[in-house]
Image 1 (tube, rainbow, N blue to C red):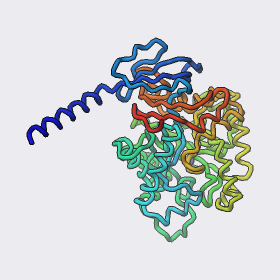
Image 2: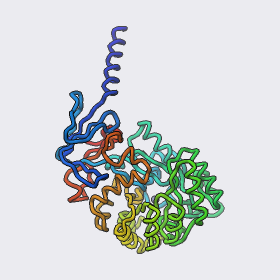
Image 3: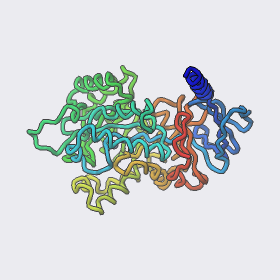
Image 4: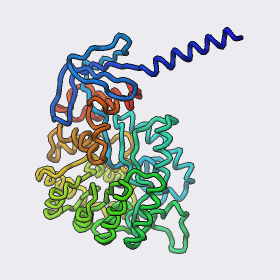
Length: 426
Ligand SMILES: [Zn+2]
């Protein structure tokens, strides 16, 4: 018996020792460096535990290192989607659907959303709101504990929205009282905005999502309208800053966009009807535009299939093309651009399809890759941790067959995924 225990103890020690010094050498045929906008050849990436230790063409590989041969592939930093809704349960276009589900059902339905997102090459997401507050925090924490596979999540906790606004659960009779978690972020004055942000900060969110115009995919909403006043938006940015949190604002209308930029948000989401003044302001303030120019494809497809609510299609009429034209304008003007898809509008795991549209509407393939790597990490305030493959950063590494700079669509089919030093797809 004692003999058995000691044998087990030795085995456990051996496992712990090898785990504590786990070294992996990845041979990369091509390696994309978004920081420099260049592609290097014949590189080796040395990964120790969860971090990148060294990158170069002349790396001495330790004898105990595990070798991963990606010499026929192109290696890139893990992709980052700055606009997802992973915690909203199964993909579907009708927000009223959540009234037929418990919070537990939504949470469990969201588990595969996280997995397919990671497996499609997105190792980090900025998740920008959920209809049942704080479900995203639970999802983030389950991933961080290693209970379920998923991307590194940065979450908003809830939508900060006016009563009946773009982030509210609208469409119900006025005498129906919503549970607390379906109107947690409702606020109607600068001080109410501050109160909501204080609650979210104490709940452990990573950033604040506010909505400064109406929405396409919300009943009773008008995307051309303005929501919140400049004063309320300024209160949001100021209060969030007290907790070290950045603010992103959903905005379709020109005034909703410009108020958000003037208030000092880090990014404007959608930015659909941005005008010339808005583009100039974004440049002047260094505001990122996070424009989801692919999901029009899914909205129209669901419209043809009859599964998209009619009022949403009316909101959407013409806006898709306007947004794409304005994306081209903003890129041409040199505004800072990040990669955000509104994942959940299109099926989870298909975010890579947006790259081809970003190239079609004015970006070089390198600019599109930078939007989803170095720019996205900068927007999140974590450039020192991810966004490129440099010593000291997390080993968030993906690989594709072929050359994404020659054919950006290879990013729709990611073949290798490592997050935090652990392989999830090979
Ligand atoms: Zn969204």
